[in-house]
Length: 195
Image (cartoon, rainbow, N blue to C red; front, side, top):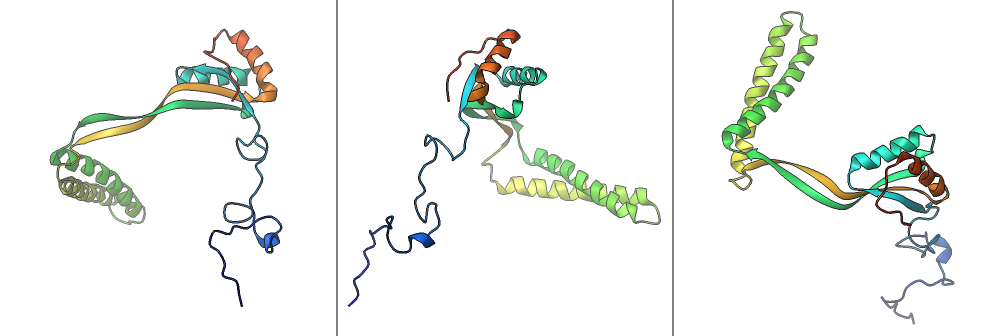
């Protein structure tokens, strides 16, 4: 008579089959490494300064590089990330057709150049025909694509990520050296904390 297996029974160290199970989420549990705050072998870092904008943090790393500091052991960490979508203007069918015509013209120019290379006759005419056909098809596709949205998105925009603060971090064993160099730079960071 066989004993039914219980669905709640989990593999424990010392149970049969333990040598065949790989480490990881579905197999044998792997003990956490280091301090439990990251992958094994991750080097702890220290924040040597926080700056309100990216150019300031970039200037700090550039200064460290100019003074022969090993910047490959440095990071710029953006915190308090915000997605900003800047509205560029209103979109209607005519504007969508114009944008599509521009995109199609570039593609048509590329195809025309490609065919023009292998043309024995008038290669300029081949390039111009490709450009015109590309612009026409681009305008048609742009207008149709905009019409299919049904007015749900009648504007154009550009998205970007912005950080509220930029921290410059270095590996712990280099923190004192980095702070000494920054002291000569005369750029005062807003704080220096361990990460």
